[in-house]
Amino acid sequence: MSFRPAPTLFITQFAAMAGFLAPVPVLPRIARELGLSIATAGQLRTLSGLAAGLTALAAGVLAHRLGVRRLLLAGLGLIAFGSALSAVAPSFIVLAAAQPPLGAGIAMVLAGGWSAAAAWAPAASRARLLSWAIVGQPAAWVVGMPVIGLVTAASWRWAWVAVPLPFAVCGAVAVARRRPDPPASATARSRTSAPHREPNVAAWALSEFLTYTAWGAVLVYTGAFLLSSYQLAPRDAGTMLGAAAAGFFPGTLLARRWAERYMDRMLAGFGLAAAGTVIAFMTARPSPAGSTILLGILMSLIGARTMAAGAFDLHAPLDRRAALMALRAAAMQFGNLAGAAAGGVAIATGGYRALGFMTGGLFALAVAPHVWRRRTGPHRHWTPAAAPA
Image 1 (spheres, rainbow, N blue to C red):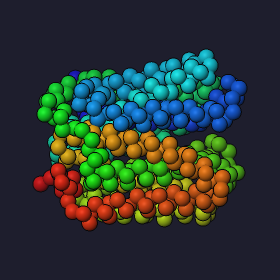
Image 2: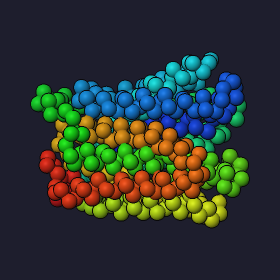
Image 3: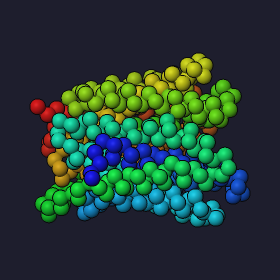
């Protein structure tokens, strides 16, 4: 029996984001138990992020050699392996060694899932399938964070056992039941080289990198911002984050109807709206409820923008989709790393107000490449913004 593509991609993207999130709420406990500083324990995210970024750069080639289905299976296997090794690691060295395969698996699943959204559905249904793949990631925030908080009362090791490991296994079972991908032809393989050298693709990738640099900084430091602003308990801050993350769903699902036809306008409009919202969120500090609402609005805008950015690839030629999604996954991973570093510098120099203006400036700057694309004319090889008849 073959699983339907929408729940299959939802589970795979949930597993990828759960693998990313697992160490975040338990870093202090890891540091305390293993006799480390918080800064040293935080390098776990650096290790997995670097591995994810480097793997994403090669994901386009891997997708054409393995096929999207086998790329997803390999990535889910690495997430399961890295999660299991993290859970049983007897020392920090072993725990650190588990992070590169985990990060590589996350990048493969992200790139493969977005490519599958374009390959596993007819043209008229691609945007709908992509939207379900996208919402799998915030669902890991909404569901996974509370679950991790509950199961790690006894030990931080359950953070990997409770969420990323079972979802990676379930995702692998669902993907394995799908039909194998048709083999790529030699002609298709020869045309997959260096899409980033095309000006329009390079502009799109630059915008994604700037956006995820801003968004990565917001994700890394929002929890600390809420704790310091309102003197909340960690459990209350987690509840606020989970509630705000729910805003990602309506933004994504509502935007899918117009993403292909109005891609450029949506990228510009939602990008500028996100810039204003993040500045208000980091500077106004109205109340815990007010900050939750502002963060939820920001999540909704990012969800809509993510849906519009994904439309760039949906109607690309088949031999180019995997390379473009791999480029996007690389922009996401390296942007998250850059955002964590830049956000730390902003907080050290000017506090959270400086972080707000820095991230707002990056969101606004990410609009510029799309303005340039609009002025230089249509795409040379395809027109992704044209909705199918």
